[in-house]
Image 1 (spheres, rainbow, N blue to C red):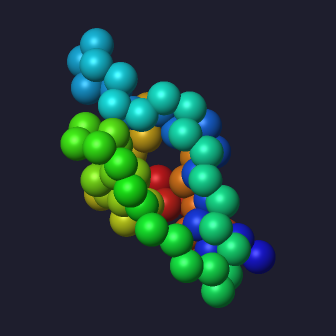
Image 2 (cartoon, helix red, strand yellow):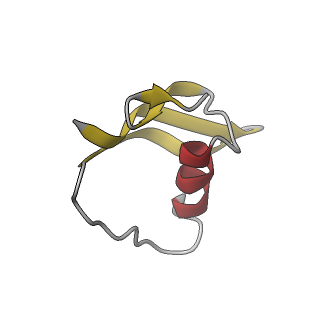
Length: 68
């Protein structure tokens, strides 16, 4: 079972594309780090997974539940 799954996530702010077609799959029991430069979309990705932001396109799942 997948603990976290992002499918084709797109997040825009006006004309600015913050995330474009992001995919991520993390299985239960796996440990990952989220690294990137400033403005790479790390915080936006975590906010989408927490249900604090809604992606403009795509789907986000945590433990099989859609977080939107």
